[in-house]
Length: 277
Ligand code: SLL
Image (cartoon, rainbow, N blue to C red; front, side, top):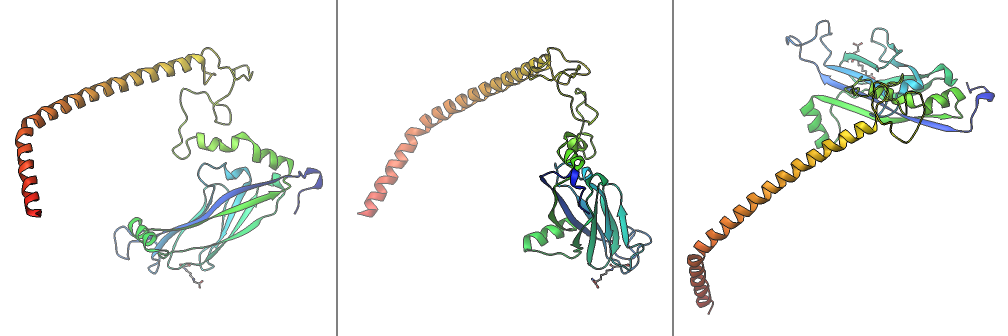
């Protein structure tokens, strides 16, 4: 269903997503590590997923939910993920094609789109890739997909160009850490400019709870860098001195040996010459 005409913009925005699956071997039947309740004929545990490439804006800006239609012998084969991670984990014995339905955020006015992914459970690819799959015990198969929004609604366009699409990276969801000395805005990113909201290219003089960067901090950072540079220079000086010592030792050793060695070399050379004649 196209967006109402009044909302249309003469723009096209696209987003990359990764669609993929990972499969691991299950411990054999009777093994203490084999999970309980898994049918005896299941040999693999697998996950099928839809995610944004690392560092990309959050796909929840435009993606509302994802449905995975798995093989129809599974219980409840239409699996719906209303929130990230958009993924389904199951066990089984064979690969099959999974239908994936991408549902967009209501502000987009876009109808759902379909994609497919073949659930690859067995090793594949060249020797190097198969060796890697053997080593890690994991078979991964994924591809990059592009979702295009032609003439997005105003609301979708706003969302797709907003700063806060990246805030999930700062909120420590995946190892990302908030820097404690910075104050952050409601979107989790460091606040910019002065506490009164004034924006300026000039850093404020002093820091404070509401001021993430200041001239004072800048100066302190410069001092720290200078101190580190002095340490490096000192270490370099010491190394140079060591090198000079070693070189002079080497020189005197050579001088000591020189006489003997020169004689040997001369004898050798004259022997060579006489043999050649
Ligand atoms: C096919 N590739 O397309 C085959 C089917 C089905 C795999 C593979 C167990 C399912 C369950 C499982 O792994 N099925 O336990 O319901 O015909």
